[in-house]
Length: 233
Length: 212
Image (cartoon, rainbow over all chains, first blue to last red; front, side, top):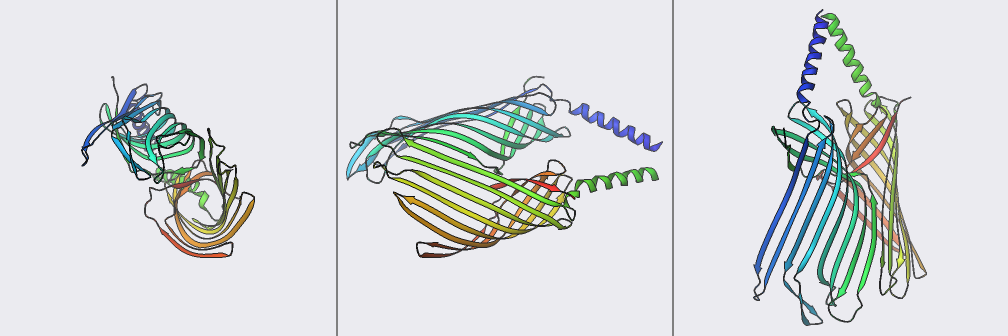
């Protein structure tokens, strides 16, 4: 009799907890980060350097069931500067007008996450991430004291990764998340690098490169913390 | 009351024995992994310069538990790197291959945590044969070398199912003595690695635990 009573109690307890944690099904969530920076410096020879940059990334997701969510990742960044750069070509001083957007990035991704909730406020999650991104980098350079060139690198790539993390719910609509491990077993990227000579009479050149890698390795990052917001309800 | 205790005992016994039956004496072990990568580049204007690189690194392991939680095994790892292309505007070609063949007997001690996880510590000895060949504008070259060493690897195992598991380990301590011979030049090298930065790469491996 006692045994049956015990089983009954365990069952009620279980149904209670499952009812208590049935709280995510169908809910949407968002998290993100943003950066904005300006700098203004004065060099000793009366020239100034100004830099500016911004970037942001957004994660938008939705719980499909109590333990499964999927969503989109968006990231974008831009940086530039105004700085008259000096080079020495065969002892001669050459100045290039370096007022330009120096880098640019745009990325889009899709993620799937599987959850294991421990009680009401904590849990762990993990799942695959597929993302595609485009980036551009531009800068003036020279090899030794040779001719100065403007190097413009455009890159397009796809990556497949797996992430794992943990969460703590500290308010009804807010989670604190921590990334615990990340692995990027596969990536493929296409890079096109243009070399435009600013001095001398070398012809401009272009290098097209295709790069791919499959490496089943796991990295444990220094724990990256994030916030997640659940709108509505 | 007695019946309840009996049920509880029986239940816990069943659970624990099924959970780590994989680590019993006599269990066979097989593990494997592979990685590859490449870069292929070409200059679009003005020249015919091309650069290509491809590398592949398969690895397999066999083992057998000679005691509960203790395994003896042998690992074989191969790394092959190929480079080829056109070196300059005159159209001079190059081609090279670098090979590493490592045979490594090891002892592994497991410490189970819960029903699906275990940590292990692996002590190993290894012998590596290095063999490189290259060809530059028709001229052939080759070099061979040897490397012997000992080391310690900690790692974790996660059982996805009863027989199939994923494993990851990281090199924290290694002592190596190497000898390479290149065109009559002989190079003797002693190196040691002590690494406490566990944030570095853990190599992942698929593995099977097979009971008789």
